Length: 292
Image (cartoon, rainbow, N blue to C red; front, side, top):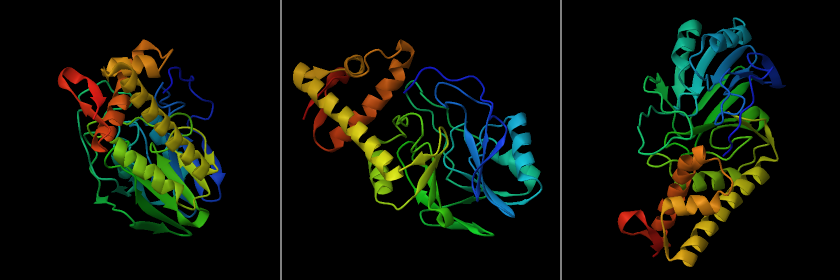
């Protein structure tokens, strides 16, 4: 987690070429939880797929239409339905005639402080992709990869011709991903990370942050970070006998701005639920957690 966010990037609204088949357009929504903003990707050359169209912002929509430059859009794909990712899907579909295809709809109000954008209640795909399904255009093929954890409906998309993976918020280039129960699930998240480690991807294109080189090494590092957090939780319980979530946050996130304590607590809770499933901790009365 991080607190400060940059001001509007000079790259905002500009189509930046990342590879022969990938253009990036940065949305004007920088924040402490989106970094410089949501990155929308245009895949293809003579015809296109648009990945994570982003917020329903008129300037961003105009920038996307400008980058599309009159080419056919075969599909508008969303990795998940947080409001910084999917709301522009329907207005962009109206302007391009494309179908909205990708993750399943999901609207959920969780029971704690959010550290990311809330769910998009208006997302209504024309077609839902499942594991292994593909969308193809001229010279490009995108394969859906189910990666639940950050959200239960999260998909990544593999660009087969360039051995690239569009990772949405599952793996970000600037911060760890938020995993907030009840929909965010640490067990699923760790399994999804392990799955990525075993893939042959050459590069990750995250929705926030720069492209990730040496992606398997990066994913292994994220797994190591999560295992480190598990170890901290278990040591705190061993030392105190039982602990409340604020106790974990105070010990584990030294120096964290108090405004982010609620969000950190959601991550701790996600870890505790995972550890409880594995028989390592148990939830006592009044919210205290102890060894099982």
